[in-house]
Image (cartoon, rainbow, N blue to C red; front, side):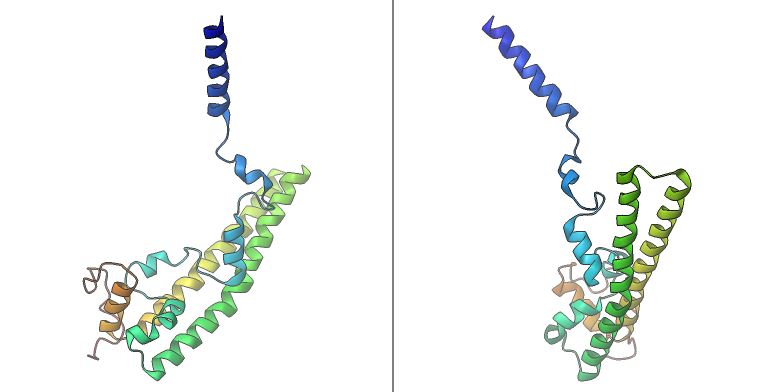
Length: 182
């Protein structure tokens, strides 16, 4: 009898474990589809992974170039250019990120209130998609501009300092930037 109760108890535990959703921890989030870290990153203009296509292919980001200025041997002109690009990027990214959080919050509200319809759903997700695309393009374009302000050897050094392998351009097209300089 004890064995049967134990087996039944283990079976119930196993079923409960199988049925538990991996999203269970998200139920207390204000915006279920976004972590607090993501919301913070979007509202403060952090990259949030939007520029990985650039970052990991030899197009340094302004924030990281500023952080690595001494190690990269930036000239005063390059430091000023990096800061200007970063400031411009922030001026664009913060309002877009904030709008994206607000749009996700509105979508959340539609579902929470039970007022969601297919028309509202399509409209809201289209807005979210457009904001997301604009934000990503914003981050990427500043990586593109940052590369043009650096020497080839600085881009290779940047990659090494960031831990991306340190094999020159690694076949990633870092031959851009100031190719004519040495």
